Length: 443
Image 1 (cartoon, one colour):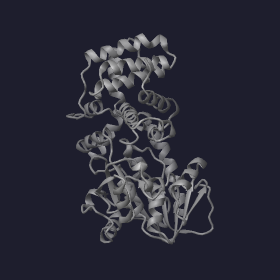
Image 2 (cartoon, rainbow, N blue to C red; image 1 turned 90 degrees about the horizontal axis):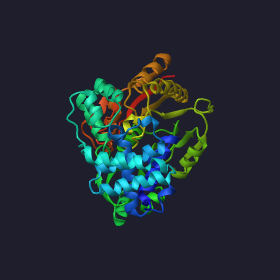
Image 3 (cartoon, rainbow, N blue to C red; image 1 turned 135 degrees about the horizontal axis):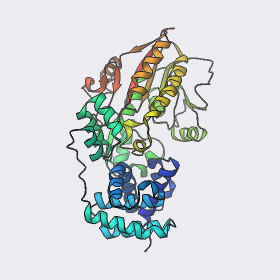
Image 4 (spheres, rainbow, N blue to C red; image 1 turned 90 degrees about the vertical axis):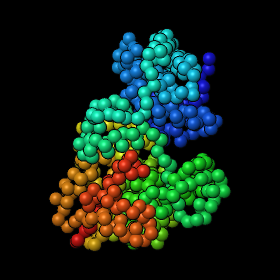
């Protein structure tokens, strides 16, 4: 029996995610899926993201029926078992025999033929003995919440400690569902163009320039292909808006470019320098951001020496990404507690480098898509202690200016703030989890 194109693609992507630390969202939008029909592309996406969201639950079901520990299974065999287990436990429209037979064929396709009878036996036991687990949580402890909503226990413990059990549960529930596709649009003309191509939109919750896609395939529209519409979470759009307006702007870690493009749209007459360390990401940035006033530089911001200062700097730093697990569920299985201290050191260094580029009276925004205090409050605290010429401003005043200007749709500023900081929580707000702080240089 040949393996269906959708399952073959899903298997190959999951194996790359597992073995090469690739990101599923990038692979699902790569050329490898171009040959698939819309239905097969949809099934492949469903399987890949479902397996990654529910991996710990799937592994528990497999381990309960396996005569071998999961650590002793070949990656190809374990991946095929996960593909089938997800379909058996979560996709009621897929017949059990089809899910089982296809995954057994995936084992054979991966040249692990000797493991095919083992895979068949495990999956048939799962079908007989393990009922589907509902994707809702009635947990009263962090351990129960982690188990029921497939998150690492150490992360759930942290979130419950920092935000409370109710918000931790909301974050976990949000992570297990397909997030909304949000776009940033500039003007009614593009809105009409999208509507003519069959795209239905709803107003954004945070920003008046944001829209949520409720129907149609945005990626097939002319505006998207020409780079006139960007897919960008509303919290990410809000961070870019916080930077305000300046005459000379530095974006320290610019790729893939959605914030750079948003800044350029707000500052069409400004000089914008977008810095990216990695050449391939810098090239992606050049292709995506076509504004004439943006100069892309491939450089290490820590070593960069620019002759003139900037009156606005964005330091949207590399981070753990725990605020984006609905979009990037593989992160939760890769991240280790020790990673947070390593990231902290890099983030402090990048923010310090960015602040050094500020002219007197200039402002910088530091941001992450992380929920972890080591990457947020602790970075701000360490940098401020070492730089007496920089002060932290209250994000509330900038949010109020955005509201007065008609840019901010949300009326509840308190929900967007954690003291002087911008803070969004997935599941609490209808967006990714972002943190931002604003700095001003005195001299």
